[in-house]
Length: 531
Image (spheres, one colour):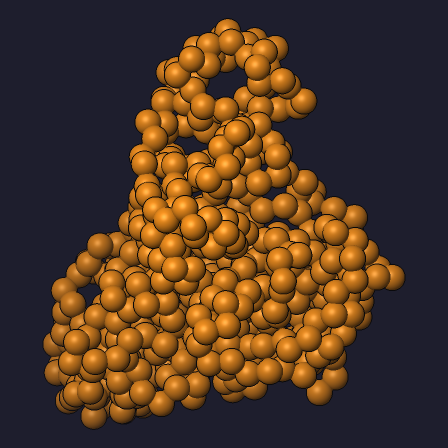
């Protein structure tokens, strides 16, 4: 294939949803239908005694949640598919946000019974802000839930985006038998799932006008389907590709990831409609994916994916040019040349060494600690800098130190690596050598921090909760000792040596602001962002 053909066949997308909508399950079923795995094991299903392929960390397997972003690749129907499975839990919003920076489109998963939930709204807003096309998959059709028409209305009212159903469920609430394909005017009826979703579902497909389908689903349900379709054709939105790309319209699909119902039709249509790699804004210029000069964006760092080797993998999204194993590139932030050896692609813990990769692909490379999240790698003769990632203001704080002072070295190494990953934010207080102040968006981040330090670095933590809920960065070069009204506050430095004030609540912060009218306090630090 030519370079241009390779770029155009890439599909790189993230799956977003509220916790428990079935995101990891859908990811795994896409792998099943994509031929990447031969037997799916649901996180929730005890009968299968398996765990989701995309959940590699032990705590994820125990609790049935995703707390890291997994990167999964497979080929299907001529496309090279890169799936970014993000954490569902709201305590890991930052990791999800960073992952969306590497995606060209997003699949928004909605639970048929619960509709649009709080975390879905937040993630949808991020996608809209970034101009990412959104595809909607209404999940759990094997459960009782809201009517498809009510869900369409809810999406419009709550998210402000119109939905155009690409298919429609056949049957009655909670006992749907199949789906109707609006484009081809066909019905696909699915066999009953007897394998707890471990294997692909058999199906029977044909024209909606074929008398056999009227017989199979019953005349009453067949007529109800015809009436629904007529209503959609008359009153619904027509599919408009430009509106999808501009975020005004979301193609809508129905199915059940748990039972594999409707997964294959969704995968095939999604790959047909989803955009190929898009241009990326850098501080200097807009980087076209078709440019032959190499550039990539580091969006995720993961330490200890292989606990035996304490490795550190940097995940990067290739934005332009062809990647070749062993190539030397410029690390823009340090202005140093780096040789990218042993590049890998992933299926959870399974790794494959790759010889080459193209724009849209996600690869992982080993790193000794040079690179950080948000960094740019590029060709030395064509320098570009991708914009900084936003920092989420932490709301929970604790002072952590090792129980065993003899393990100080491991403690510092573990804390530094996990902070570089973006798992938590760490702050240092002057003259405090054996402890860090940790900031988190949600309490579960502390739990994961404690778990990982113990299991990956052999360090038991002492964890003291601090009475603060607000962090403010001090703008400019201000001596913190000159600030007034900080009696009940804590002054710390972040990982870039910027001054941060930790204070108990917004009211007290307002009082500090009044006492220091010439100082600007920022909710998040200033970023270098491409226009």
